Length: 88
Image 1 (tube, rainbow, N blue to C red):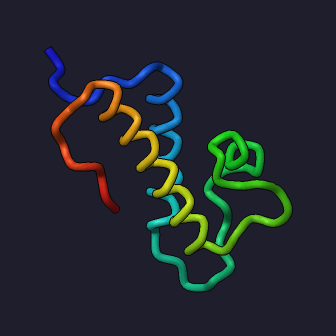
Image 2: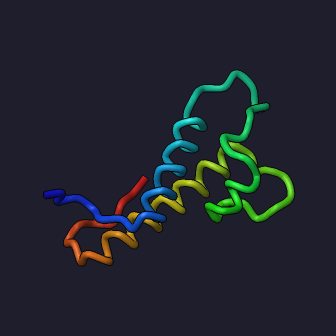
């Protein structure tokens, strides 16, 4: 039996997409000119992009981590675990 967090299907899918984007952004880049890890539509769906131009890399990483923390807190509160909230 799994003793970890239980996620609804949509939350698990969103967490997977967040992890994929964070992995892509964590790769070293020689210049500030980097490709966004996801399309604008995907970033909008994750709630980390509101329109206009894609935010700078550092800001996008912060937004993705904030969203990931929200999902993990939601999962923790849903199961009333006595675990401290996740941190980056």
